[in-house]
Length: 259
Image 1 (tube, rainbow, N blue to C red):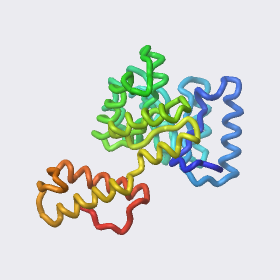
Image 2: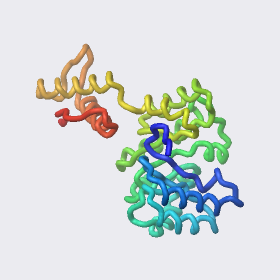
Image 3: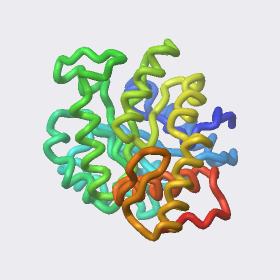
């Protein structure tokens, strides 16, 4: 299975599949996953409405997958669904309705929920916003997810950019990256490289973070000057967090950089 260097693949049973093809989508997914070995985490986005919902859950509990993406996640919907999922499934909550933003803190506190995903297109269709590469229409939504995710230790994944225009994609990536997202969904394989380059720690940034921690150890202080800039406790902790992320990406090994 060609995965184009993606960290994970989401198989969609919901919006991308016509009602008349729901059963076929399940059969194809089951046949493929039970007969092929894949080297990437697989998630399934289930339907949010009956009768498809229960049929989806019955299948995913039997599949060799990492987890499930719950569309239109709200506190009540997740409380209803979580007991139905097998315990080994990671739950990714797709936040794409106005009500969910008033419940983000409670959603992020749910232990089975590992990640918060932003679904901007569905959100825009409800609130009537016009999304462009400036990101203005979804700044609040993005920031709300960041705050809830960071407060409760969840991974936060930015919404996909639906146009294949590379310049527009870069601008949209920059918006999410600046706010602090951990990664970004893609709607086409050609987008994966640009997303990986943006969200993976660069060699220059890794070197800078290592120098900050090295100087911290040398000085034995939480406040010092480096390259003409003042460094204090928040910046030191930020460097630590950044290097932890680099290690997760496999870009840092054997380094003694712990505070």
